[in-house]
Image (cartoon, rainbow, N blue to C red; front, top):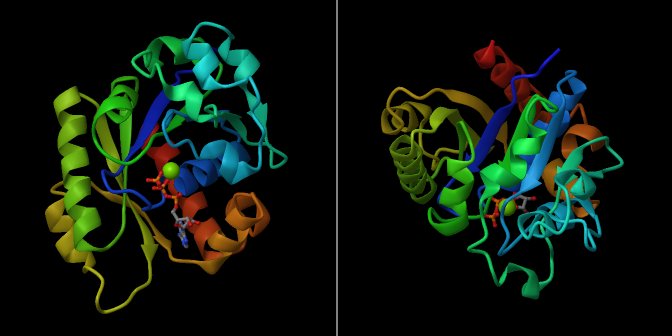
Length: 241
Ligand SMILES: Nc1ncnc2c1ncn2[C@@H]1O[C@H](COP(=O)(O)OP(=O)(O)OP(=O)(O)O)[C@@H](O)[C@H]1O
Ligand SMILES: [Mg+2]
């Protein structure tokens, strides 16, 4: 059966809100639900995927695919958790020609092989980030319940809208349930009609898992964060049906 591949980009504007953590855990959770998924590191300048999974990508990287020196299938790494990823090169020399960022062309061969291609890009809303968004048909907005993250995420939504990329919804990450956090009603007001797809708690198990180079969904599947990432995977599948 031919698969309809969903190309989803994580956007936040602000750095450090949890894009990479979310995409890796979402990728694994989707796989556990029987969906073929792959995480592609389109953050060529400050790539995190290989580091966060303890992979040594050597030459099999997205950079080589962009240079047309390797096929995307040569650049697929399988983590011990079962997660498929295409890392970006870690060397500072590798991103010099990053005008070569036609991600759509590079990722096209994954079409119909995977149900989900999840693009993890960097912070900001320019360069590679907008190139990643252009290669996607859906955007997941990752943010935290604080003013700076929310203001940047509104800009991320506007960028996706301008590029004609569907905004699937918002993932509220690192939620602590404290009084000083922005209230859900206020956040809903800021994101207009877009839904909050999942609220991921701030969970030390995420930090512990990341330190061990394992997604929390695989390492501590019963943790609060893992449950929330699995819920996000289910919701994403449902909205695509
Ligand atoms: N739900 C969570 N609970 C606790 N810590 C978290 C959670 N999500 C992410 N973190 C931690 O927050 C930090 C930033 O996460 P991550 O690298 O995924 O963010 P990012 O948005 O990809 O950052 P960048 O913009 O630099 O790419 C990491 O130390 C990560 O372990
Ligand atoms: Mg990241």
